[in-house]
Length: 223
Image (cartoon, rainbow, N blue to C red; front, side):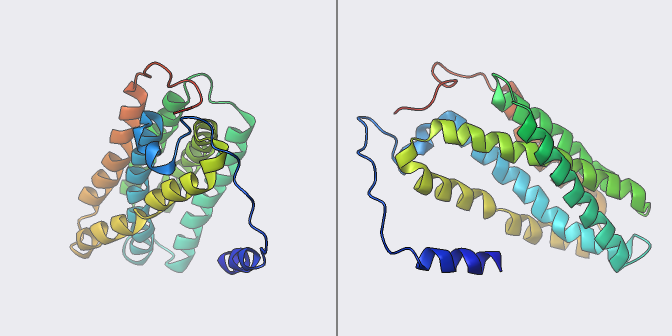
């Protein structure tokens, strides 16, 4: 319904906004690939979203084969994930990531990565749900803070196209995770699946934590 409403609103637009005159050296969408901050955050989010795509298959599989309660168990897991996202987003919106946003993003991503390990608590529903809660609570600040970074680094006249490119890249990876984890679960190999999810989330988080900003990376991109 939300996608349909957005499409309808777009169709009702009859007058295109004239783009502001481009400043000398302004960043075009393709030039975003030369911005290291945008590149590392996008790659980190793509990897994390692969893990989330795997989790969206693991949850129903657990509810069917490992957890008591069946559909009720799945509803409980998804409710825990959504509650965590709500709390995490509210907290991130009220708190600045500080002068090192990449480190802050990497820290919350690393904590969220640890939540995937709680899947190994099956068949204990409460333990698995606690992991889903942690994943939601600490993944939401990643998005809130990263959007702030992107808004600061992408010139206003290219934000529409720039955000479209970046979001397309990041949102294209969950189906990949779903495809990768299915053969593992079909063979009953939950432990390798959990380790894969954790690694996909944790490795890029470590990369962000260890990232050393180059000259000018703390400033708004003006290339």
